[in-house]
Amino acid sequence: MKKHLTTAFILSALTASVLAADTPPAKPAAAPGVSPFVQADANKDGKLSAEEFATLQAQQEARFQARQASLPAFEALDTQKRGFVTQEQLREARKARMQAAADADGRGHHRGERHHGEGKGPRGEGKSMFGQADKDDNGQLTKAEYENLLELQKAHHAERQAARPDFKTLDKNQDGFVTHDEMRAAHRDMRPKQ
Image (cartoon, rainbow, N blue to C red; front, side, top):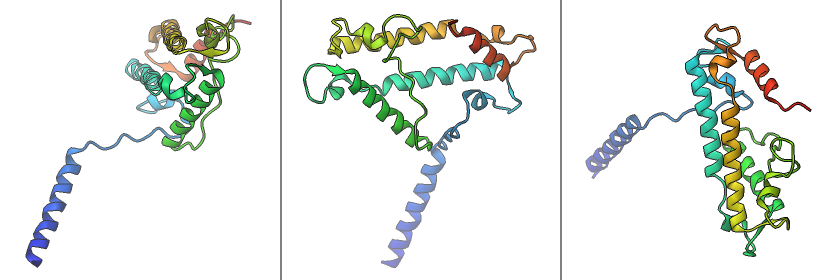
């Protein structure tokens, strides 16, 4: 009996070690408060090569896709089954998603609120995205209007991506690298003038 238990223990230990060897190590989470620029700077020289810049862009796109994928279905938002959702319900769902993401990456609290659903539109003119999606202006979104809101968000993202300067444009001194200062200056230049 003792021999069988010892053999079973050894086999389970060997199986666990083989499985652990086949499993890739978990990717470490980004440190809280570390900017995307610093995260993309693989060799920590304070500037981004073209390859590091491409990594930064890919990470930004992946974050957007993950946010889009985490958006709740209309049915999950319409908890009272009334056939519509309000801006407040969307705001609360967003806040809960942001808090869950902050908890998951160890920050404990989410960063400030940035809404495209409140106030003025993404460019500072006209209606908010919620207002644009709310075709009958009743302060509520039907399922079709909610789906329109999601499409507006995707279009806004695509527009922002298209407006972002490429590596060559950002590299003002043409040294083959983009510094944090060059990137900040470009983002400052992209802001709408008031």
